[in-house]
Length: 380
Image 1 (tube, rainbow, N blue to C red):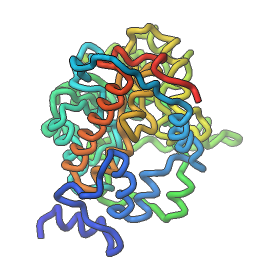
Image 2 (image 1 turned 60 degrees about the vertical axis):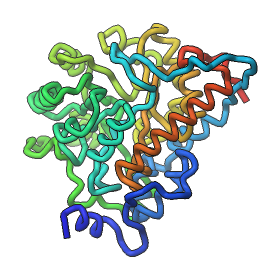
Image 3 (image 1 turned 45 degrees about the vertical axis):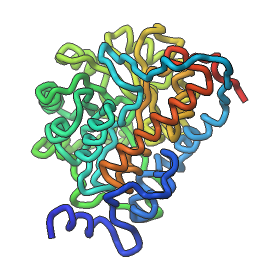
């Protein structure tokens, strides 16, 4: 038995299916991968992937926010010259669908992030690779297409952070996306109730050999949160240092407040990801879609913004673009497709989502992404 099959046998118990080598016949839209995923993931893993932090209020808010908007259909519009091409931070993309930096993808499939990278390459999709991937950033780069960026978490020591940055630059990543909103992540109540524990084979491959964070002894009266967990949280000085060190554009992920957006733009950050970390940060934070218009208003109209949080359909993508995003990141939908059918599933999900977006644009009278403006939406 080869290693992939052994990993598959280990990952799945008798109540779930092994990943398929073909597209399931009952997949009719991109969102169907979420419906099918529980058949291919053990319940604790499904609970972890689907859950956020705490009670999951922000996870739910991300999805509900899309229901507050309708799309105006238009008639007699010539869209035969239509296309999805866009530019992000000076790079040309075939379409505005990028795979988000989802950690620990070995939870869903033995091929893990390499499979997602292969799908991105096949569908001309941008890819943002996670610091906490279970494959090394070099292996992911070898499988991905040319539009690949690296998501960076600040490490407890600057030399370790700099090492990750230099590895990403050497591997041909075109930008670094620094996540700033996840210094503390409260455990998901649903994942805890389901008995989830991170498996032994799900380790952050990029951090092997890195020194562990120093143990801190709290003084009497000090807080485990303020003086403990937050002691390693990045500061503005850390960001300034990174901007000086980086040889590629630096983006920031995890921005919801317009004042933060304006500050980061003024500091020299090349673009932002409007995101609440998929609901895995502050439980009770606004939905990413709710925050998006104010962030767009706080920065220049040409300043690049990515959106992350709750995309399940081409209509969702359209709404995010209409409210200010230049492109979107796909997180959970990526992992659901990976669990069902590996690289083929992720590629198929991207194909479906692209066609759903094209159909939505055509019926809304929008031939290009520039035609998708707030005027194309109606508030319900």
